[in-house]
Image (cartoon, rainbow over all chains, first blue to last red; front, side, top):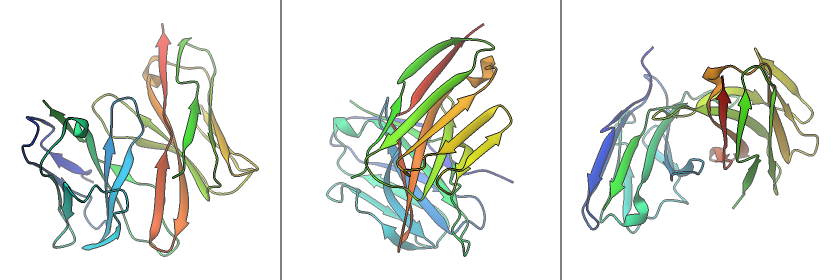
Length: 116
Length: 113
C-alpha cells in the first residue's frame, strides 16, 4: 500500500513570495491533516479535512495560509505571502474514516520550507 | 491550548541500556500515542493507549497511560542503534468534529555503540 505522498520535498523562497504544497493521502482515507513542524518542536495541526469539508482550521493563520481539498482526495496548502517564521516542515497525514474513531494518523515525509 | 511537556529533552545512552521518557500535560486526554520520527521523515506510530492505567507493549517498547489521564511514559529496553531518533508523545481529545491530536515537545535519543 502506497503511503502519503507530498511534494515538493524541499522549497526555498524569499519572504513575501508565495508557495504551495501538495499532498496525496493514502487511497480511501477520508480524513486529511496538515501540520506545521518548526525545528525542535512537535508538529502543530493547521487544518483537518474530512472528505472535502473542513473539520478544524482554528490554528490556521488565515490571513496568509489557505488549504483546499476540492475532490476529497488530494490537498494543497498555500502560503501567500510567506514570512521568515513560516520556515518549517509541513507534514500531511491521513486516516480512514471508521465508526469508532481511528487514532493512527499516517504521515507523509513532509515538505521542508526555508524562507529567506 | 494544551501543552505536552516531554522529558528529558534529549538523552545519550549506551547500546543495550534501557531508556525511559515521559510526557505530562495540564489537560486530560482520551488517548495517548507515542511516535518516532527519523530525520527527513514523518512521525511513525509506535504505541497507542486508550484508557487510564493501560500498559501496552510493542516488542522492546512499553508505554503506560497515566491514571490521572494527564501523563504517559515510554520505556525502551535494550536499546539498539536504530532506536536513534526523536520520540513524540501525542494526546487526543475527542471532539464533535473529530480527533484532535496535540504533540509533545519531543525527546531526542542518541545511542552510543
